[in-house]
Image (tube, rainbow, N blue to C red; front, side, top):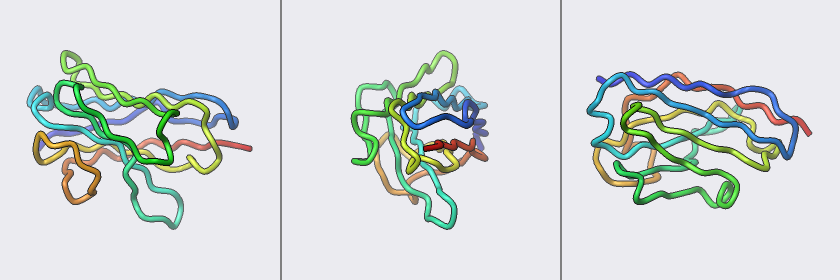
Length: 124
């Protein structure tokens, strides 16, 4: 099973930016769609963004559209999440996951091989 390791989280002021990275342990990473999810304290995990195997298709949660950008570099087995104009409501643990297929979906159940996550804290 592929292992995923996230990095890039931290503490930032509202309006600031962060870039998250997710590195996969397997080259087969490039076959599947990939997604970013987040979970705030005492909240359920929610979809943030997803990207197809070649980056040709992306999907975003309404709450992050226009502020976040997902991308991938298959040569580096890495998926990125560029987060701009951060808001306190974006505070959460962000995790990446591999889709069970090539489809770009928003459902948590459609993903597997979750990373441990990286904490993002946005202060007001």
